[in-house]
Amino acid sequence: MKASKSFRLHIGIFGRRNAGKSSILNALTSQEVSIVSEIAGTTTDPVEKPMELLPLGPVLFIDTAGIDDRGDLGEKRIQKTMQVFDRTELGLIISKTDEWGDFEETILKELKDRAIPVIVVFNKSDLVQAGNCLQRSFSGENIPVVETSATNGTGILDLRQAILNHAPDDFINRPGIVADLVGPGEAAILVVPIDKEAPKGRLILPQVQTIRDLLDNDSFCMVVKERELREAFNRLNKPPKLVVTDSQAFLKVAADTPPEIPLTSFSILFARYQGDLPEMVKGAMAIDKLKTGDKILIAEACSHHPIGEDIGTVKIPRWLTQYVGGKLEFVHHRGHDFPENLSEFKLVIHCGACMWNRREMLSRMMKARMAGVPLTNYGLTIAYSLGIFERALQPFPAALGVYQTTK
Image 1 (cartoon, rainbow, N blue to C red):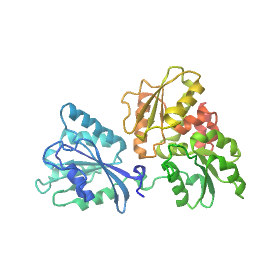
Image 2: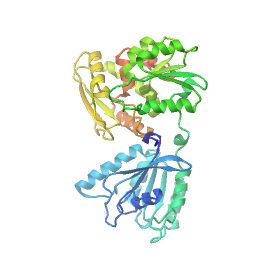
Image 3: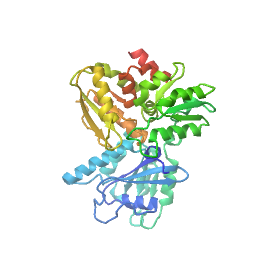
Image 4: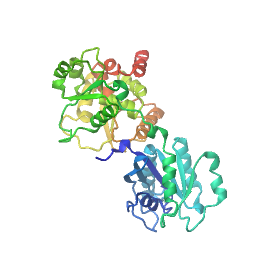
């Protein structure tokens, strides 16, 4: 089974048209992933290639269109390229040494402003040698410089080593999803309703990732549907350290779980794992300020087709409308599309972002913060609107403290 995108180091490849970005990607992956041509602007949309880059592990290379593209179509390609910055965790700037200029400086500034590690790659070294003066200009910024020739493979091993050396620490030492709340030798009960949107024969990704995290930590794990939860408690000779439920079953699970046993949801775990839980707690508290007619953005990382009682298009709008006591306007965005102007919204409600890396989720939170719009996620919204918010935050003292001191 392949690692999901959320577990992969996202490496963005940036540069001008015809700088050799696609050739570098093909050389790194030893595959013809991107079309290569002497015609500038061959790459039109970001091209993704997952691979295992040992000993680092799973990575996702993202080849982008040239940032110097022109015309109306070129502007749209540049917009797609700029979106890639939101999910980039390590940036490669590809340039011919005699072309380094304002375009490359723009990319470098964007990456540095976002505190994203950078590697400068002078490609086509078989045609033009990188000048020592230019290389020295990066030495004070702790930016590695690699000379390559994608056509003959020169420097590709050096570039792979530079990627290994400069992978962000938070990728290598990423915190767990739930294991720290349970502990080795202790048990968690995971409540997993099987609804129409659960893939047949499989569990959804947050559930699978949570199970793996517990197993990696030598914790016990019992998986049940919501109607078997009470029987699960009866069969255990020791109470579990934690109960985790799908947010849609919050009310029933809360009623069936003894109050002394901590309870939360997969979605709230991912608010902490992929985003900033205390900040999202503040966002959920903005629900009390909603009024009839307010506009709410519901954002999902997946571009799935909603069916049945879909959580984002049916259940959350229904629960929020009941809580507010008046009609609200809901707007939905899916995938990497996200409104540039958030000021028209009173609240952003995001999914758990299990398919993304953490940087993209944090980038969205930053955009919302800059626009002055509160942002929260599905699980927190459901817990708040159903009146079990404090119970769902008990496993997280810092986040609970934010709620208790702010309410």
